[in-house]
Amino acid sequence: MIAVGLTGGIGSGKSTVADLFAARGVPLVDTDVIAHRVTAPQGVAMPQIAAQFGPEFVAADGSMDRARMRALVFGDEAARKRLEAITHPLIRAETERETREAKGPYVMLVVPLLVESGAWKSRVDRVLAVDCSVQTQIARVMRRNGFTREQVQAIIARQATREARLAAADDVIVNDDTTLDALAQDVELLHRRYLALAGA
Image 1 (cartoon, rainbow, N blue to C red):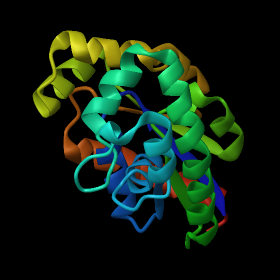
Image 2: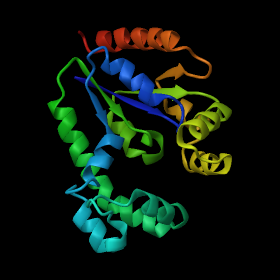
Image 3: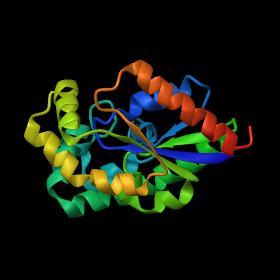
């Protein structure tokens, strides 16, 4: 089974692209979903997070207080590294387990920070980047999340540049002013290519 790493900056539309592959029966392993699971109520990361950061970072339901943690790690590099030291090994182990258990000719790993992390590139056979202009990213995230332009720009600044992502990619889907039908056609072409690569 081959593994395709799907990545893209915030607001690029990678979730939409992932859903289109899933609709074609492709198993998805989504590191964001896993990250939420390990920090959910009774999540495996929660005892360590409570011990490292204190009970004020645990919400009433027992999950990680995301808003509080986001505010802390956004301005504090040491805190971000402490959080990642807890969560990243757990996310990696769970990702590897789900990948092993996936059924199909190929599996798609949805990894927003694939280019930034470095190590991910060696774990996939191909990298698919969803690309759009920075202005499109900003407009989408402001509309979707209600963030200010400055907040979105700060997030984008912490991610890999568009150029770095494109340089790392084997395949690219452009999703600027694209219709869902056009996006689906792009996905279908790549789906057929990946099936052929997998010998299916």
